[in-house]
Length: 215
Ligand SMILES: C[S@@+](CC[C@H](N)C(=O)[O-])C[C@H]1O[C@@H](n2cnc3c(N)ncnc32)[C@H](O)[C@@H]1O
Image (cartoon, rainbow, N blue to C red; front, side, top):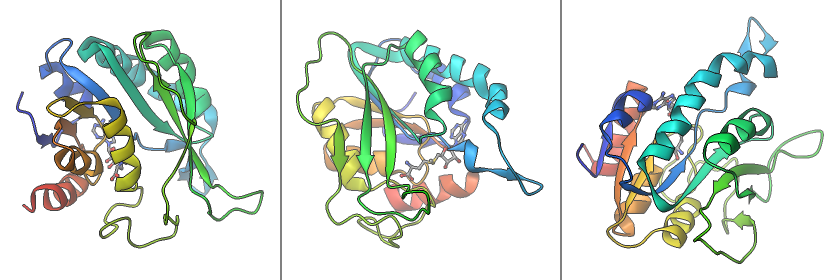
């Protein structure tokens, strides 16, 4: 496996090439399935049962590749959390639920102005500070998120940078199994961390290649 590369493949398949206990941090943002509609019907929570074997296997792979003192940040929203939490906790151990406060967002039953991060930290990690993250100047409808917005669910670079900077050192290796437009890769390059990433969708992969490597 080469470092500082995004692979255009299913992360479960690609991760098999990552050596045991070689990753210093995982920061990842999986697809948020539950908002999907099918023939005009909204997806229901139970539909997610079909994804359970995937996430069981994914978290087992995370466990295998993580170094003993490594942390995991796993993004989800209020609907996905109930699905992910028991699987994540059973395999990796959940240490906290963190909140990204987007400050403002649309919504008619209160706004959807936050996203969640399931956090795993081993016993050796002792971190004070707030469990709520904010990105000054971020607005959820913005066309720019520190550079052009090129992916519908692109995370602000400043948010990912905060997580990478706080939980890894220069020269460490960060894994993002759902790279999207490559935000984690950019944060790693800026902070002199190595990265490994996977992006299954060819269109998103090309977007990331252009954004990260100018290819
Ligand atoms: C929520 S987006 C990530 C956005 C990213 N944080 C950013 O800032 O651009 C999730 C991405 O995971 C990709 N994906 C879905 N299933 C995958 C899989 N099995 N392996 C790798 N990538 C996958 C999707 O194509 C999508 O681009």
